Length: 336
Image (cartoon, rainbow, N blue to C red; front, side, top):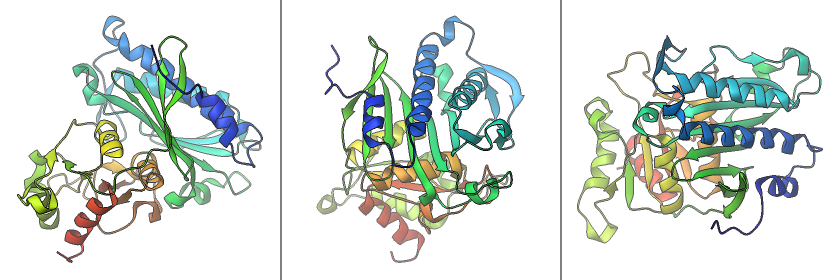
């Protein structure tokens, strides 16, 4: 039997909704949570309905497209559009920003999302998830997008992720706190199960793909060597935990502390600045991390201070407990 405090996600949103929203904000987030419920159901039967595998196409990121990537992207586009309060969307699976001229006047929000993060894990029955970010439209007129979209991450008014694992969990922030909701399989509602999540200031684990270490900068190599070194007085070595899914690795760190790294890779000439996308991966995760008391950095800059220059701009990411991120920044910036 699911144990909750009885607060549903919709009830929570109604109590937390910003003053300017007039119900529109709740309508939008309700549609996003509905998408999460549908994806959760679909993933459980994907192998039975021929939804596994690749489409044979390559997306704008230069990556092979999974069948569920396209299906989930179309699902979120349609559900978010039905809210009637969004004027534009950015997605990993769409080359251009999707502008909705029919909602140009009443659309208050811009939504950026990664419909299926970690999709390479789908066929292996691994953990995948959805990341979303909401920005408020501030400019009037059809040319508002460059101004509203390409501002730094502090302009996000909400962000969250849904993790599809043994249970489906929705983690959400509007910037002041972080709350977690678990999908009840019987009622098909999200209920508050992890109120006011606070990330430990220091952890005992690190998460990174060490198989790529030869392609990292010397500063990054030295930082990871620090976490692996034996020093009982500082509780080292840290344990390595790496699931190959940003959300799965970050969620563990959010609850237990530690640091996740996705550094720039000298071997990949097409992605010299890192792999993770700023608008719909790094920035929303950074908002969550900071609201929970953690930090998010590129190693040299605070992620939320970065203003994107294109919809699919990539950045390196160091995210997690504040003291552990500080250590990595010390190496990157020559203080260690």
